Length: 167
Image 1: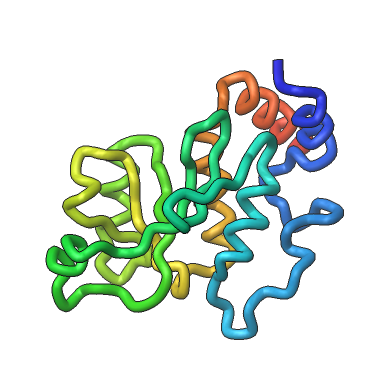
Image 2: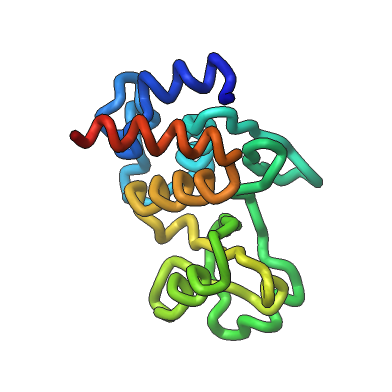
C-alpha cells in the first residue's frame, strides 16, 4: 500500500497533467527563452509521489523506491569521442526509459532533443539536451520515467486516480 502521504498527494494531484494542479510545479517562472533548467527538472521530479533527490559525485539524481529515474549526466571523454561533430552543447539529463524499443524510437530523429552514446548500449536509458527541450516534453519525460521505476502499487494508485479524473 502506498504511504498515507503518497495517497494524499495522489488524491490531490493525481492528474498526469500537472499544469492545472494547485501549487503545481508550473507555478514558477520558466526561463524566458523557453529552455528547461535544472530547477525545472528538480521541481517536476520532486512533484512525483515518493520521489527523492540525491547527490552522487557532485551530480543531482532523482529516485523513487531507491531506483534512478532521471539524473544529471555530463558527457564523458568517451561520449565526446563517440559523438564527434554531433556533440550537443549545454546540460545533459539522463533518463531511464521503459525498454530498448522506446529508446530507439526516441533517438531515431537526429534533430531530436533525445540521443544516446555507446556507454548506454544495451541499457534502457536516453540522454536529453536540457537546453533544447520544452517544459511540456520535459514533464512528459519525468512523469513517464517515474511511472517506469515506481512501485507497482504506487503506479496503480496514480493511474486509477488519473483515470477517475478523466471521466
